[in-house]
Length: 79
Image: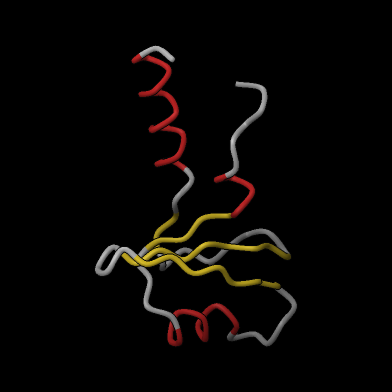
């Protein structure tokens, strides 16, 4: 793989991460929580129609600084 291709892949991966303050927009999603503090990842199932404070509860109960949709982290087979 070329250096340009590697840079593109890194930029694509970096662009899928969202700040912890941003609530997921998809109605149901499997999301990966990432803690920059201790470099730990955790997967949670998020549903928009769960209790209204679902995202607040996730933020309170899990130590993370960024999150991403699992499907956005999977390799794009068209690349």
